[in-house]
Image (cartoon, rainbow, N blue to C red; front, side, top):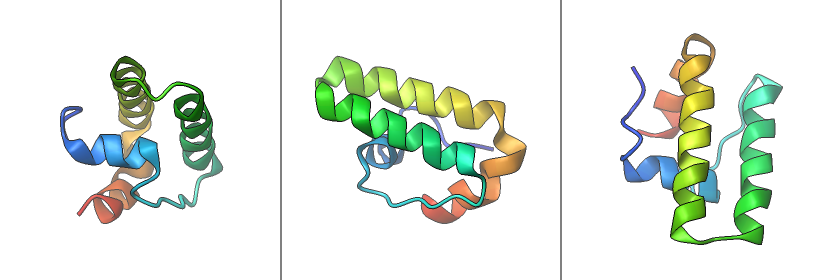
Length: 74
């Protein structure tokens, strides 16, 4: 089960403070795209949007990414 969206580790992940290198390229791609989006607009509203977007993606493919996310966010 994924951590709650409100967990500060999600914000750290999308900001790049938590380094992730997923075996599946799509996980790396979404985080890279979100990082570029945050670089353009680092407002609190955009951060919330980016966390939601990342969470929704990883929740959708939870069976693929769960072990790696647990490893990264421990």
